[in-house]
Length: 407
Ligand SMILES: Cc1cc2nc3c(=O)[nH]c(=O)nc-3n(C[C@H](O)[C@H](O)[C@H](O)COP(=O)(O)OP(=O)(O)OC[C@H]3O[C@@H](n4cnc5c(N)ncnc54)[C@H](O)[C@@H]3O)c2cc1C
Image (cartoon, rainbow, N blue to C red; front, side, top):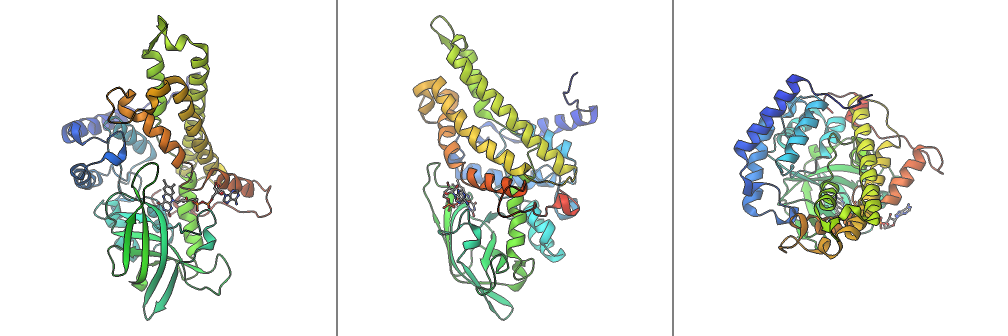
């Protein structure tokens, strides 16, 4: 039986429209660099402008409601768009998009108009402001505080590891609003405008470069209508953000460029008068890598279809997320076994295979194990949801399970 998905004629037309448009509008030198940190200022501003156009066409945020600046399109459309974006090396949105589902579920109509619409239209960008020096995995240990001052809030504290390229327009995340309230009832979830008086940003240097920042909040004044959800509901609002971040929306079109490159390398490299693939050890490594990539694709697509079908989710998001983080590290090792020292040559080395992608992957597979819940935390979540832990939990509400329009 052939399980392959067949696109309809109309869908193939849609694909052609995107492909032709991108070919006509994205010059070669503006395509995503192998190392995303090599994005030049010129490329950054090209893509800020291009995102406006892609949003206008409904392709940037395809499945979100049209009334808020999304595309109002189906999951199948999103899959085709992502396939074509990948082919054309489109640079993705500079917003940390986890805020979209969060605002759909928890935002008031005014907040959707004020925050969601300009972000879906790509006019404004936002970063996720969750982690603190003493609160990463254990987010309930946050220390940054928000204190009421008339209708406003005054924010103080420090956030760390905040991902994002360029300057944001907003930062979003939880702070303590009531230090005396019990855990999980003591937070508020804020949209914090940037720049603001008292708010400063300092770039960090991780193994993967300078795309993470620290933010310092020193008596930052934020208007009362920038609180998403009720006072004391910040934990619950954060859980919606995290539910999606932990893999709960799935992935329409999972991409693994490193796997493609590994296969191409093995097929195309001559060794001892034959193909590198003739070597039984290389064969073993490459096939293990391929198998694991395929398993992850299936898990991510299963989650995507469950999400689109508005099915109840449980451990599924964390299962895919955990597997992705683990197999990325294993595949980075396998690529190093197969390509040897060449896999360690950086993007500017002429002899680096695939313009240095394997070297970028060696580093990003390590840093990638942390954001969006570490491997251990994904296991903790799965255990809680499968009923084999001291504490039990259900999946947090998302646009899919709450039935709001647009997923
Ligand atoms: C590249 C990158 C991008 C990031 N982007 C963002 C961002 O945009 N916004 C943001 O807010 N944060 C961001 N983060 C921060 C990220 O969310 C945290 O690093 C993560 O939550 C882990 O927190 P921590 O670093 O404080 O580690 P810790 O929580 O201190 O964990 C240290 C180790 O202990 C383990 N551990 C902790 N608790 C348990 C437990 N209960 N059971 C078993 N093991 C446990 C962890 O798995 C880990 O191995 C980013 C981090 C990185 C590396």
